[in-house]
Length: 129
Image (tube, rainbow, N blue to C red):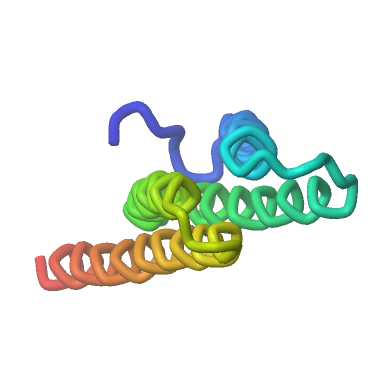
């Protein structure tokens, strides 16, 4: 994790902005290109808000020094997005959008949980020394 900024570094703001914008674009790609839905500002805003909330949580924890949580949340987010793409391309008679969104949430939440566990284990190992 040598490439991540240090604890309480101002560089985390740049990471947050890039993370939020990239995640927003990926969510829009799935909704409007893969699923072929018509553009609706309400849904576009909802996906952007969801991406920014995830970006604030992940990068805020990274800023606080929980870099393992950031890493595993990011891995979970990527895995969730890939699940989203997988479910979006299946013929589920109209349920593709809901199942893909649930797959995305499973990936994100799984990444957060794994990150918390790893961060806790690392903290315990450091505390025992």
